[in-house]
Length: 401
Ligand code: FEO
Image (cartoon, rainbow, N blue to C red; front, side, top):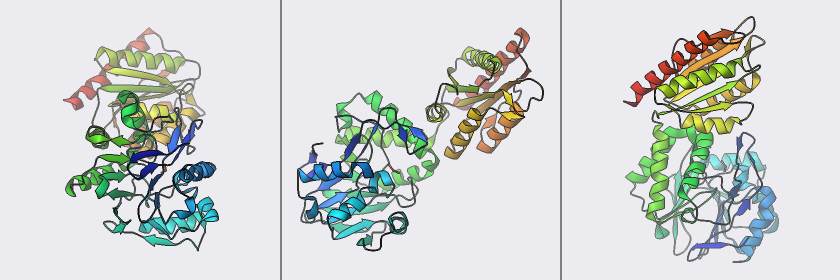
């Protein structure tokens, strides 16, 4: 691809991965993604981050349209996950940059990832700076946003924050800037990314946003490592405000009801519970795990104040797709959820007990009275389910104030 000049002498030189759907083996990127790298032409020619290994040649070709890649003096590794550092071996196989800058944790992890002793690594701690010539870089460690090595690079002369994975969105497009696409589309992709990758690190997000305010960083550009670049104050505020809201994880007036069903009894129960929620004025999204990926469900869970899990009993437990979902959600540690559970069974009926145990370990507030129905729910059982849905809705409304 052609490089895109963001500001005079600063270029996007990354790669667009149009056809990826599987994002890192655990989440779906239904609109593809990008691996963003940024090249600054100054006294010291500096590359911020690289791309996933299969795109290394694209990166080098893109850079070559501006400058011979072997003229790169410095590489800054804000984050060493292979979608951003995967091209380093190729670069070092071709050229010999003078220095590779990384965080203290980055140094340890780069050695463990790439098993190289001859890269000229130099550690930059939080707050340390680097002169590129006319411009300076200030390094801001953002440990666990979202890996231990993660850091931001801030270029004050350009009012530019290169933010690694933070503020990223999985969008493959010919456009490079947020203001070139529909804002609602961007927001949904930003939300999906946060829900499935950043959620457990929400306290770090809050701390990082506090640091940005405390240090009075003047930001006109946020350049993330995935998706579109935020330019102009409005779009920078869009990114910062959304992250502040995401990190606070407020109760929201929505519910997601998700189930795994064997012979549709659990499904019937779920639809009746959803009716009860709707009767209380709660917007509901119903999702059958046979039709949705766990990352799609997680986005809805993130956006919901109430989460209702249903499963048929299977081998004294729950169905495997529900177990997959619960494992995934638990790891992401979403906060502030009212929860409900339900399920049908044929003879032993452990589904509700198992689901309740998951809900407890996730720290959700369980609404008591989970319907547990033998075989097929009759009209009386469905009335019980509607009533349970209403109870969940009432509890959620108390949280909303
Ligand atoms: Fe986009 Fe954490 O790598």
